[in-house]
Length: 431
Image 1 (cartoon, rainbow, N blue to C red):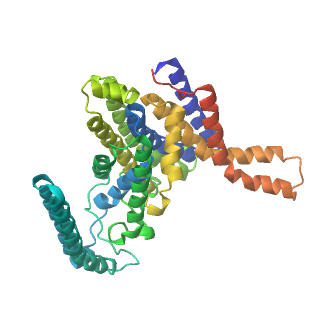
Image 2 (cartoon, rainbow, N blue to C red):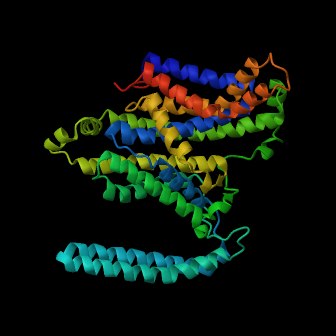
Image 3 (cartoon, rainbow, N blue to C red):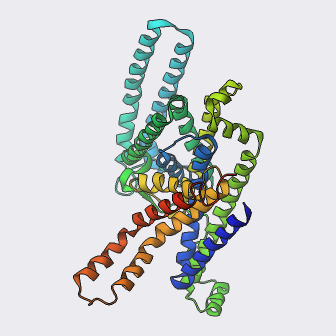
């Protein structure tokens, strides 16, 4: 990483400390937790783009699949819904798998126009057969106390398992997408991943039997204590008196520190594996493919297979981060997955930090998320200072103060332009 990178990280943590002293320590640790998750998201995109040059603009879809894992794993099953339609859903799934197996066999053992006709007929018949079991089951599930449940629920396991399952969900989706689209040109791949991510979000919004759709799922279990339980702890009460803080703030900081410990452990594991991979012969091969696919293919490298491999690995990291974000929020809201937040902003993190450099991706996650959150209060302070000489009822002053809420996009644009001008390879460039 070098002295430059170390100095930038020290400066970054110094800014977080300033937020704690000027605004509040709970806010500072909230930003820290989101910065840690953002750093993992940035690492996932860096694995795809920085290692192999794959332009994935469907990041949002993989993050959402990771978030969905929080529901599937941690919530207890809704017994009435399972009894009403669980069998029908399982039957529809088995039919779909059976149809997929038949299509695979036909594709392997038949040739010519007859194969195309037969596969088409099997797919049409399978779709009708699967829907005949699926539709009544969905109606029955969504009719079960739809105001409070109306979905199957989950497996009732600890929510930390959802981090692994989220990675598996995202990796599985990436494998399916990659088998179809990784032979395309980079711009076509970008369009394909964007379209597929929108399909994933549309599915999560509309399949109420699985995720409650836009009604959202709240009250997910937590892997850390609740603040209200810690507020009666004699140890924390003593610390609150010693630090001259309210017990509410101390309990909030304690919970956020627990989250930070979990997130930091995952970040360090992903970072360690990423660094080992990047410095290995596999990493050198991936960079060679990124820099010149034709030459790498001429040397006997299976470019498409390696692209699929790195696409799946990066998407798995995105899925893990998505599950972590749902864990931190304690709820799953499909409508909150927007391209600006879960695709564009993550790409800005990679570009600002330095694509191809894992430490740069982590720093980019911290820097961009910090200024994304703090742009509004900083903008409000700037506007208040600039208009302090105007009358309190001045229309211009009122307009400028209200405009501070829009400083985020301007701030991101300014950061991106400055970095591209003065550090075009990122704050910590690839060696």
